[in-house]
Image (tube, rainbow, N blue to C red; front, side, top):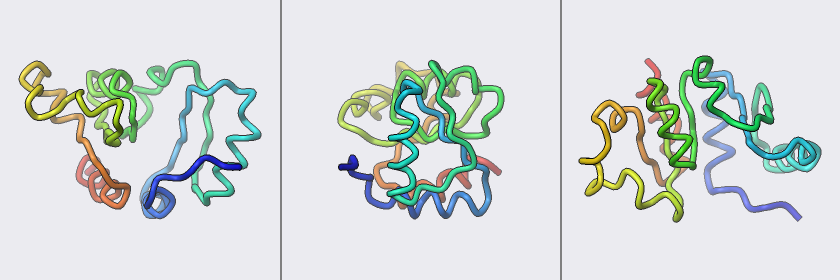
Length: 130
């Protein structure tokens, strides 16, 4: 059985592929490659590359934008001037909340944009990447 897909994710990715190359970068162990490929195919997730990497940070110099759920990874990319769409999740809700933004550098605030719904991701990515 496959893990559930977030509503709107497949359609959002299809919209993004019209204008951007999509690299799926995961920190999963490479022995999950066959299972991951099957999940992506089953859910109709378009992509140009599937990259297994111990750390995503090494890609900060080669990507134009990140769609991420990890606050730690989001901060890493934002510090390197890479715009980040932070997908809202229960485990990251306390991070970068409006009442906590005073503790986060203004540049980082501009580089990290939280989004709740996949339907909003393509528009936000287009706003972040001129």
